[in-house]
Length: 87
Image (cartoon, rainbow, N blue to C red; front, side, top):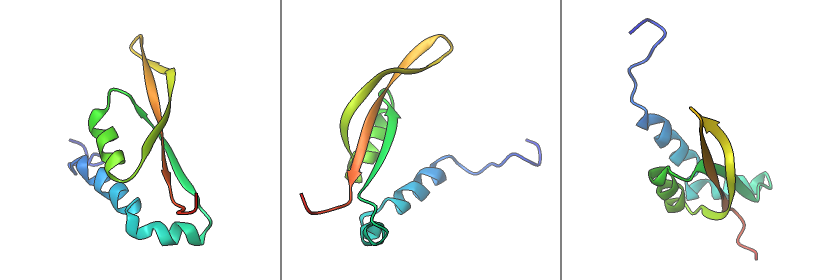
């Protein structure tokens, strides 16, 4: 490992995202008039999908073959977290 690499575990990045997207921050989002948070996640990433769903995100669509890696195409789910209570 060189001096520019870190040994910090990858899960710490996820924990930061969970904190930023926690329901306790919903009032702050409403204050700046943010109505929803949208994201995409590769359909094969089941753990990430479960994490986002546990935070209140729902799948509202799927884009087919959004990118390719090593000659294989991947689909992505479109996910949304609605931050307003008025429907």
